Amino acid sequence: MSKKVTLKELTLKNFKGIRDLAVKFGEVTTIAGANATGKSTVFDAFTWVLFGKDSNDRTDSGKGAFTVKTVGPDGNPILKLEHSVTAVLDVNGEEVALTRTLTEDWVKPRGKAEVELKGNTTHYFCNGVEIKAGAFQEKVTAITEEQLFKLITNPAYFPSLDWKTQREILLRIAGGVTYEEVAAGRADFAAILSLLSGKDLAEFKQEIAYRKLKTIAEALNEGWRPDWANSNEYKYWPWFVYNPAAAGFSYAYTSIAASLTSADVGSRLCYKTRELATYAGRQFEGLYNDFLLIKK
Figure 1 (cartoon, rainbow, N blue to C red):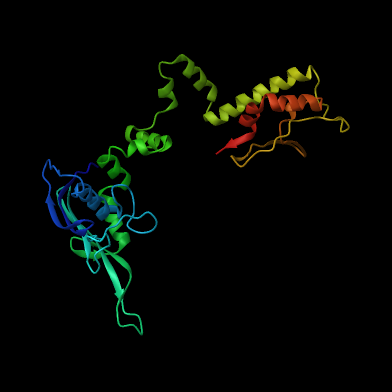
Figure 2: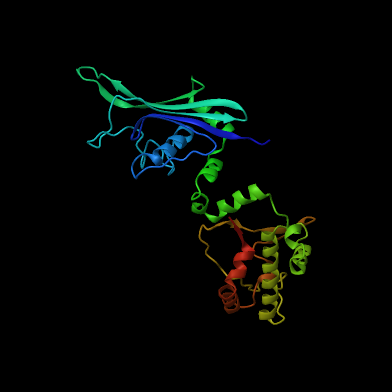
């Protein structure tokens, strides 16, 4: 279902450097002025009332927080003020007023004459009625998701994301692409697709790696085949020490009737000498990675 959201009015009271400001928005609204006159503060106010962050994605508390409070000439926050922003939105023809307010908590410790600042409390209102933080966020999310809001309002947001997140967003917007669509009109892609037989690309890559390693083992062994009935015959495999970059090792076994044949590393990939196994492991390390490891 399509949704049309229009910002009608933004009211700032004691928010950052602005003491009292109401901006009514039309089809096109221009906010202009010299440096440090509050242009960015208006946008910060809009993002703060919705998500509790400024336009640079900084929250109003904790490490690296931005300052919501109005600062005096001495550079310190002016105390005992209430800081609030109200955004009036038109959501599919329905007017919704969202307000976020920051108040200071002053207490008088026992045995002291003066009150002290204990901390700050954020209050949330929808259409003038105070509600809990969770309910407020649900109402905001129902109007616009935070990521979607950033994509629409900040042209620098998308380029700042890592490529995996960018790809995920583009696929959400454009829809998924099937293997068949990729292979359409490309004979080489179509040929690969016919070989997959229901497997995903990772499984197919693992299968191809095994086939290559099997061919390599047969060539290096020059006709030698392991005699599994001879327990005195030595068989050799490359030995690897892996770091935590992998999620685990692949494993396969075959059970026939009452007997059990187990192959942890591939019974067809063993070598007749220690030297051949060492050579294969070093020379074809990439293939062993593709075959043995389950990538994250």
